[in-house]
Length: 168
Image: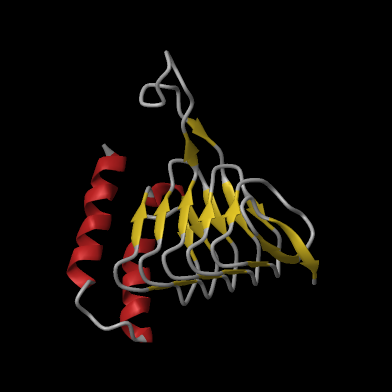
C-alpha cells in the first residue's frame, strides 16, 4: 500500500509543479516535496519540471543534487546518488530488468539490482543507467552512453556499452 500511495504522491508533486518555472527556489521546493517520500535526501535537492521519479521509497540522495528536465528515475530497487551529482536532460535510471520466460520478456521474473552514482559525478544528457550499474566518484558519463556495469576508477566514461575513455 505504501508503494501505491507514494506513486500517487509522486504524480501529485509532478503535476502540481509542472507549470512553475525552473528557477532554483521552485526546483528546491519540488525536491523537498519528493524527499518526503524518499529513504533520504540531503539539502539543496533540485528537480526540474517534467522529471519523473518513481519508487521514492527506494531513493537515497545526498546533498546538492540536480535533476534536469525530462529525467526518468524508476527505482524498483535502491538507487543511491551521493553528494554534488548532476543528472542531465532526458537521462533514464532504471534499477530493474527483465528476463525471458516461455519465449516472452513480458512474463519473465524481474531482476532488481541497485544503482550507485558517486560523489561529484556528472551524468550527461540522454544517458541510460541500468540495474546493477555503478559510476565512481568524480566521474563523467558522456551523453548518449549506456552504463550497465560497475566501475571503480574515476574518469570519463562513454559509449554503448559505457567504457573508460580517460582517467581523471
